[in-house]
Length: 100
Image (cartoon, rainbow, N blue to C red):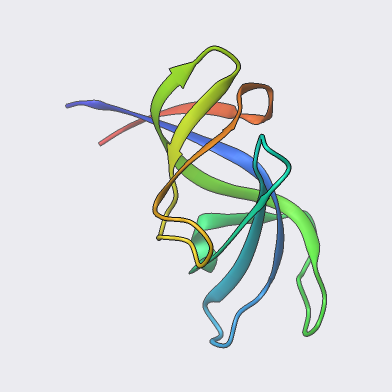
């Protein structure tokens, strides 16, 4: 078995168009934001993102590489404003190792 390097990063979560879909906004190191849609099983909200409501939470990502003060991660799905891979600040990552 291979250890898959997984983590969560902070985000803002709201409901998507479909029941199992969530819109997620992640802050990037350059103060830009990445927006993407994911299945709700890929997010950990701190509260219920009711209709028209945004809540703080975390999105699950896969670690690709660690650099100085940032980490390259793969998003669960490609973003609307970025591709499937982004750089985030290293101090925002919460690591966890899973067995694939």
